[in-house]
Amino acid sequence: VLLAVFACESASPPQAGPRAGWQGEAVWEGDTLTVRTLAGSVWGGDGELIEEMAIGTEVGGENDLLGQVLGIDATRDRIFIADGIFVMVRVFDMEGNHVMNIGRHGGGPGEFSSVTDLGVDPTRGQLVVREGSGALHRFTPWGEYLGTLRPRLFGSISGPELLLRVTREGNTLVRHSTFRTNPDGRPPMVLTTALYTVDSAGAVTDSMDMPMHEEDEFSLRAQAGEGSYLPLSVPFGPADVWGITRDGSIVWGNSSEYRLEIRLPDGRRTVLEREVEPVRVLPEERDAAERRVYGIMGGVQPGWAWNGPGIPDTKPYFSALFPDRSGRLWVLREGEGHPVEGWTAPDDWTDWRRYPAWVSERWFDVFEEESGRYLGRVDVPEGFLPEPEPLIDGDTFICLTEDEMGRPIVRRYRLRVPSGQSSTA
Image (cartoon, rainbow, N blue to C red):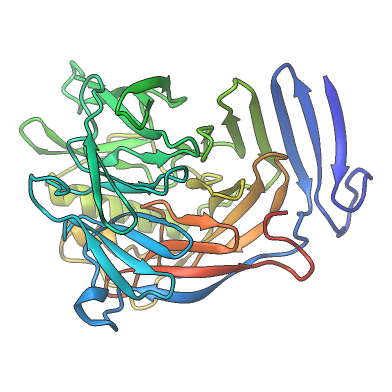
């Protein structure tokens, strides 16, 4: 076991009072490296996302209108958006100008029954589009249809919740779940969640069980009909969070603790830890969250009664994580909540989902994947939505947002970090 204490600008152990640079410790144990951030950051301050372009504001007419954004990816000069409403891929340049559409609804070559996700093959420069059936369609960046692969996975599939990532080797990674029926009448639960590797010929070459809990104890359910249930997570309850890097490494953590584990393809592991105080759930915030749950579940099942764990006293340490193309991990965090000005109780249960009475401050904690060092904090853009996964490459940050009318808008930002620092460390 090797223990090392190190920092960006000082090799001294952390001391009381402000200090420049990242301070932490690393411990090797077998093939696992644990890196713990104790204080400071590599950037020595906060990063900032500066908006440079927006798609979906309808400034450019019909071609600037987005329906349902289910996937975002990009090359150096083009942005690809999987649109589930228009059942096609919308293509724009980096300035937000509409270039073309790829595919359309139908059953012929280069057509889709549905569009659920997409990715750019960094090896071949091809666009991979996945539809609900699991078929993978390949196109050139200019829209030329190259063919369709239909990989054979096993068991039932969770449909649009499947994740797609195209690795540096050109392999496509898909998430695949099988389910079981509970004998006590509760809704079916995930039995296994696996990550499958599909090569460019459509063959499934590898699979790996995801490191997730079999059942989510912090869940609620309402009966929506005969044998049909609406699941809902307990507000501020911990959950399994995971992501996939470009080299196929799995990043996983349970948000009950500030601990992330990177599982590399060669079997090595890197564990990232950070010492932070948990964020308290305010009493008024708890009451508002509880009313929201009853508004949603009572709208589905009249007279619904709470049937899960209570709301925790503190918030989870993170809610999502995003590996980027530059070897960084962006960890989405939630801070103190505050009431929404002018909020009124919705009339419909679906609006209870969309319009919460309280919202929380949100930001990213950014880490360097290889070293495990904490780079710094970046505030989340207004209206940011964590799904689909944002595209982050160097100083470019492209994500889906939602305006005050609920309209989907894809925005491009430039990351700016404190003077004299590199955004990629």
